[in-house]
Image 1: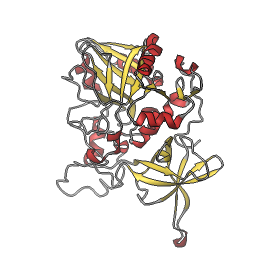
Image 2: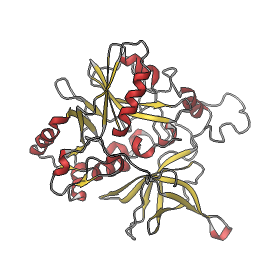
Image 3: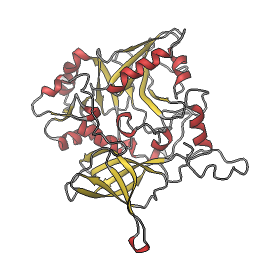
Image 4: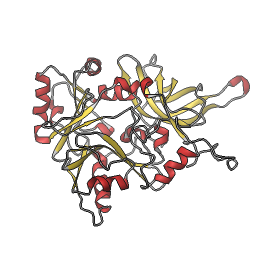
Length: 393
């Protein structure tokens, strides 16, 4: 099994959306099981989404609710984000890291003045809630996995919820948040600016009615084929796709929106600071433009190989990483996100393994090959030999 391979047994979805009973609905798979991949015309669906007028069933996502007067200072102390003083209906996101700085959980965050709502992958909600519950100690907080009661709807809208509206999380990507930093392009040059996105929470029993109300206003229902294609185009990392057991936020450019570098101690903070200040991430996220002429499309987990210069005796087919997300974009054609060794040249000739052969892949840099953030502190003196020249993890 290759790194990131999804051929392992996948648990059945916790919930199956009633919208899958729609005529033409094709069920999603992997982390998108339980909702529709598309409803019969994925190209038209994606065009509707990119025009800013569509609704996406995201009811397979998980929802964790944290209540109690100590909730924000407590979450601040154990996660990567600055949350003390978070005002109601202001969206952000957080990571839960291992002591070594590896990503274990990721969640969108919004507070309604009475509770903090965490939106995450459906398969991660029970374990995230259980971990948080173990960390309560004597603090005045209450943690509940409320996925059975609440469902998410995706909208191509860049606006926070307002008083009187349902709980709404606006995706902060790709705007570099206060206390964050970037390993990719400046915000103004980032393709993610063209992807407005928010999630609206509705009672699960009212999901179909909430979607029907949007359809009545002229918004068609579209599947995850469309939402994933625009996510890949935006280089937006996702817990259920880009993250494996070795992932650190630097290699996914996730310090833009999910990590506050100067807020103080939390689990994994020392590793985050060490890589940012002195080291370089071992791997880097890229977007691949795949050759679609042969109609072959890789699966998530497929191996990415570098073709060396045959004339100079270079290696043929050296494995340099793996595909994490694959999409058919209505304008770009077949595209993918992949995690490669940072040492892979940014102009390397790449191929991706597929069932039936391999396809050529053009590399678009997401995380810079040198592995240094935009605001890395300058060295104050000579470094120990090799420090800053090799992966820190």
